[in-house]
Each structure stands twice: as structure tokens, then as C-alpha cells.
Amino acid sequence: MRVIVALGLIAALAACSTEDRLRGSEFEPYADGTFRYRADVYYPYDDADRIEWLETALKENSYCPDGYEITDKKEIVRASTVLGDAKSQIFYGRCK
Image (cartoon, rainbow, N blue to C red; front, top):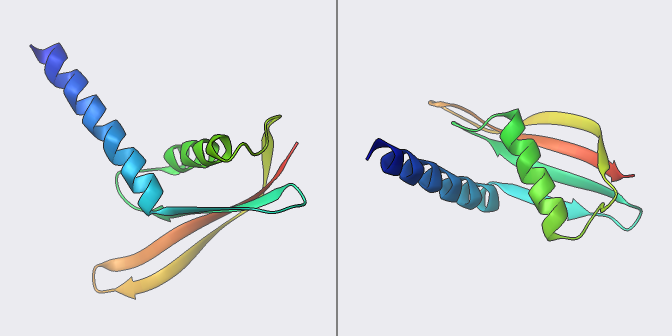
């Protein structure tokens, strides 16, 4: 029974991750083989999750089939509130 509950929680978290990725990120490919990827920073996701989201965006857009490299990464504050800053990470990269 515990295994079934654990598998259900894992599936639910995966579904949340997909929806959060779609809602909280933006992929911009450029004609010269470079790209810009913005991902909102919020709990419970970390840098590894945002890189996974970036790689999903690359696959979904058939971009960088031979791999990519991150050339720059910035964190910006989108808004300041009484609850804290709303931040995004912006990844700049290029296809190999």
C-alpha cells in the first residue's frame, strides 16, 4: 500500500512540475543558434529542475540536437513584495 501511495505522490509531483514549467518559463530561440531561457524561481524547484525544464524546452522545439552550452546565467528580481522578492533566472546559451 505504501508503494502505491508513493507512486501516486511521485506522479502528482511530476504533473505539477510540467504545469509549473509551462506557466513559469519562457524559451526564445534565435536564428544564429543561440537561445534565451527564463525560469521563475519558486519553491520547491531548484537549479537542477530549471535546467531540466530548459532541456525539455530544447527537445520540444527540436533545438540543439547535438547539445548545448550555457554561456551566461543571471538572476533578476521581477517584483518586490511584503512576502519577498519574485525572481527569475535567465539562461543564455548556444547550440554545439
